[in-house]
Image 1 (tube, helix red, strand yellow):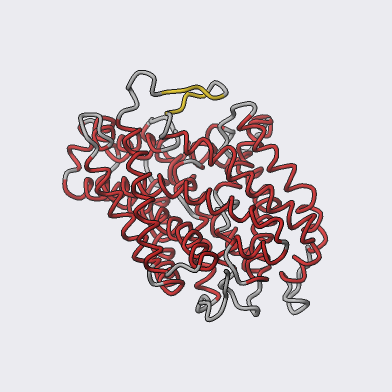
Image 2: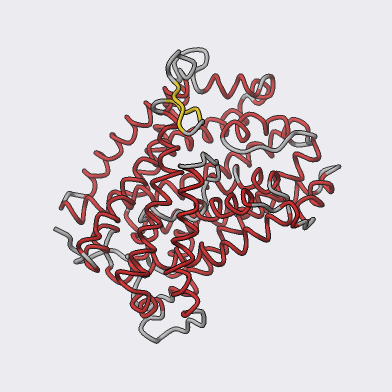
Length: 459
């Protein structure tokens, strides 16, 4: 039975904004966006991306915010209160976030491992970057280091969550400003490297002939996945807001901050790789192995590399706390479980599944370990989780949420909540209603079809 009595709230609007932005800002902003911008035309891709964030990203986030603030409940309880037949949509979001967190905490541990490596033994890292990365994952035996640091990262995430919204807010108000300072500093350093001007030119050059269907879908996928939508996280965070908070301005600020991180990361990575002659890429292999060549080639590379992995760590933990809070709040409010015991139980299960994920990376060369889905090779347990969440569960959750707001609960109700029933202005209310009802379902449906039917990697 759900209850909202004595329910915590964020202490300030700034705390909520930084917490929601922290949830949105994740590893994908930093290690995926630059590679996609490079592969899809640079400046032209940036323009398409900004348009999509402004149209699709903000509208989906606003829809989730209004559900949460209207009901002051977790994702399942919120949708149940508005229409009980649709409460399973909130459950799908909770499940998706839980699956993502299982492997996300392991990757967060990788960042911590590399922070220590760059501080204590950078020459070993640089001697053979790929061997160092694979060694962490157990290429030479059991992946003990990865599992230990994954546990440390999960413990820190759970510790923050144990203090409720106050813990989340305090962490976000400290780490998010530091994240921006680090990112801006690293961007300035990259842009001042000899030869970086070529990378800057590429990022600023607008040639719309480089834009095709793949580029548009890639921008759509990146914009969608970078905002932490489709997991019920934003519903849960907004449920801790007071009725006086301005959802219209909060949505705009959160989306702007998340987009700035992606843009700053692009203007950090692309000039640096142009300056060093290393091909841009994306994902864990690029961030943990390939970029070592960049750090080796620039003055002060050890310090720059250490700061970069601190940046990854901050981005990861601000996202992991939001996802874990979504799961814990659901179990506490819907199942009547005690918060701290729930947190311990969930963390144990998360770690067990995370161990299996890391082991799947370590032993991926075992015969028969790979299967093919739509022509894409995936490990039977490892990146199968990523395949399902990125290509199906996340966009499906967002699709159903926007359909629910647009056609079941109703955009008029959403707009009333967004404006505080007339207290706040919403000049784009009519376009918002049209976008949520028609544009968002079509756009998100295109993501699902591109990923599941045509096997495109756009997440």
